[in-house]
Amino acid sequence: ILVSPQTVKCLPSTQNSPKTILDIQPDEIRCPLDLPHQVFCPSSCSCERRSFDKYLLITCFQIDKIPPLPPYKDIKDINLEKIELKIERNAVTELPSKFKDKVYNDVTRIFASHNIILVLALQHLPDNLEYLDLKNNRLKHVSLDVVTKLSTLTFIQLSDNLWNCTSSLDLVKFVKNRRDVVKDFNLIRCTSKKYFLEIDTDERCEDEIIVTVAI
Image (cartoon, rainbow, N blue to C red; front, side, top):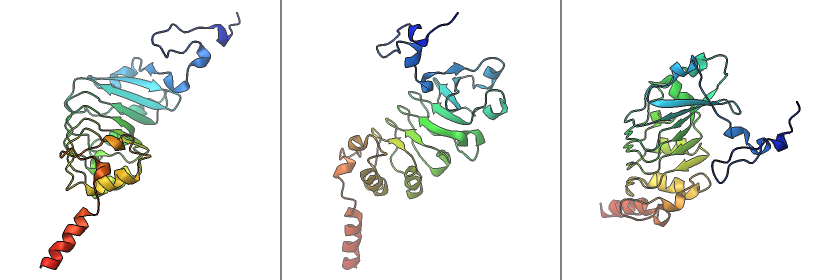
């Protein structure tokens, strides 16, 4: 029996559901890890694979600490190469260290909004990271080496944190200069309620000159 793709209709579940098989985008096709591969997935998470771009998709629920990531490359017959980590709306205070969890260094996309992340150091940013969403956390400051690493990403969100304007001028300058990458650049504010876009990044230099003259 020959079946035309145009005639095979999808059961609508949302307003944007594809109408036929031809309307399905390759990156929308996800498959759960079947047994025995499912044993690799952390107990507090669900794991899917997306064959289109060879991603392992890990989504975790009701956690305050990210569990060790599974040795997914040991699963030879499904041929996965990188990880997308989704931990939104949990109670995570810190991202893993790429030096302690070697599998974490394969993560290229991190969805970590609505947690209570307090610190972001260079060790928390995997080498090939591309996408980072840290909206609605408790970050106050990041060092210059972290800002330098952020400049290599293609998508960043940082709004609704507790940014300290005085100690975040390097980040402010980056956000103002890389609006193509920082997607919520116009929403990022310091605890003083002042938006990053309103801050004069030369203020620190002016203060230093005044102090030097006084001395």
